[in-house]
Image 1 (tube, one colour):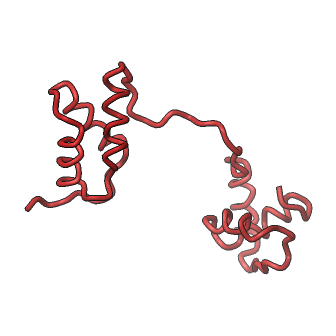
Image 2: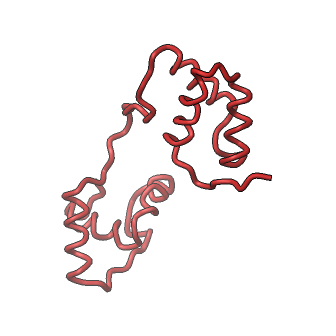
Length: 129
């Protein structure tokens, strides 16, 4: 049995696909080999077929293309301001009832450390950006 490599980057798995594609290895066999080395959750068979098709059509870049979507609320300037405010007063607390936001919006912010919502609200003059 092979030792698996957990947590491989997408571009690493795609590099394997790019390596095996010119050798005319079938996509199902590529998927089987990837699962042996990177584990069953590394990528799906459908995604392997998609990348084999794109690489055969001439794609060279293995990284995801930038997509349109909702712009991020977090930028370098905001992170700097938040860090300054946290360092000024480390006793900030958050009460969800302070904010008039829906639960799904609050969940998006939970990835930031616990003081961020309060600080962002203070920076924005009491309103969520």
